[in-house]
Image 1: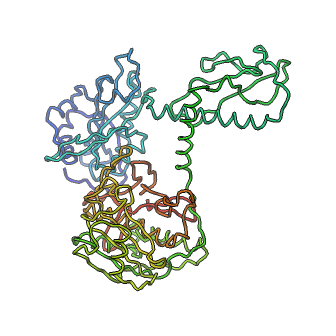
Image 2 (image 1 turned 30 degrees about the vertical axis):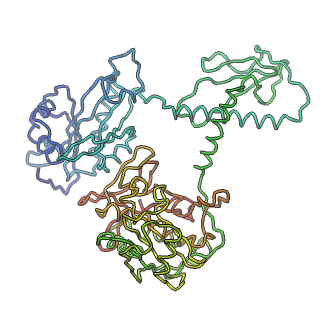
Image 3 (image 1 turned 180 degrees about the vertical axis):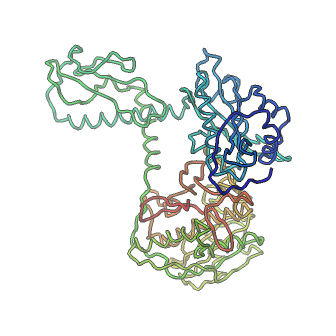
Length: 591
């Protein structure tokens, strides 16, 4: 279909798809989708045979085009019990007529994109589903590489609940699909075991805190608690959500039902003395606490949760008084093993991009990321001069002179061959080929920085392409473990090279801000081998809105399909990890 150009503000209206739309509907589907739809599908759409649909038209178009399709959405009503998300939907089995709305296709012609038309079409579907009393959700599939669509559905509060392996077969190649759901009319997913565990632990944690606080507060009191009289209680005990238990001294009101995702559940306690004088709320009696095996379970649940909460607590990267790397940083790139031209060009372009101004039309820029690293000097009271990074030397070791396993001895042998002269302003960067194993690479140790002889900083970057792509090549590769994950195409078309850029960026940022382990880091003396630094504090974050398994906001190159968040030198694009911003005490991303 030819692109339509308009210089005015379009007037978009929405209506049902009609038989007269058949030809253009087929044409737009052929232009947009890699999958070819049968003619029977289009006949069902235009004649409303078990399919509901909406068309978007531009009423301001001249020459008889004011009723021509520029966007569409098609959907079908299906029985909930017969769908693939039956196990993901909480519905009443006594009502077998409960339904779902499944979005079949959604599209907007290219010249009308980014005008909110797709969002409005989805709202039409949600509005329709909400108007059907028996409907409980709207759901759809999205191919794994369609990042803009994924962002759209997440913004509209759709939940990504499942990844389906090899769901699509296009031109002989399999692609995964993400399953998104939007609940309506009270529909919701059933409580998972994890949600139940979180609720129970939260309930118990709050109760234990209350008990401990009240015990400490009343330890010195020697007077016996007076008896409570139910008739003098000021608290309601008639609701089904409350269980009243008689206890020595005070009446206890213990909630017995709570929502699955409740993050905290405060136990309400209130009592009055037998003579009716109101006293402050105090300790629940031991009859309301678990005993015996239940008490053991209580602590087994409580303390792991407390440990998990501690691990996920807010990061605090602080300055410990040591020197930082400032001024001119000269890099010696050591290409250890067999490397192609792509790897070398991508790594060198990344270094050049740290100080490259791509212009106002190419935002955001990699140099903005490096500006955050430079700001550590100011926070440390060492001025705010630029840190100029450049490659001054390249060394190739094609014969694997130190073997094919990266160890401490390996690093020392390679650096001795490089012989940087012990100049701390010259940093050797060892980049290992795909057939070199790096100790710890399979445990997310994708790069490292350290010192040789207590004075010479160095960086080692592993290539995860062959050994552990599921550990160190995310988000370009499916992770070996963890939640559902959205994968991206590498921005420079090479998984190994683009993954090494991410690892190199992390190591470089941490080598500059904590070169001698006395600079910026989170003080965890009990976990010295797990030091949290400028980049590791923001692991897995590449854009705003990130969470486990999701990079956050990124962009997609329309020509290559690669995911990126920063522009670099000579038209290059990179996916750069988030870093800790010492001025805002938070993770900072380019997008």
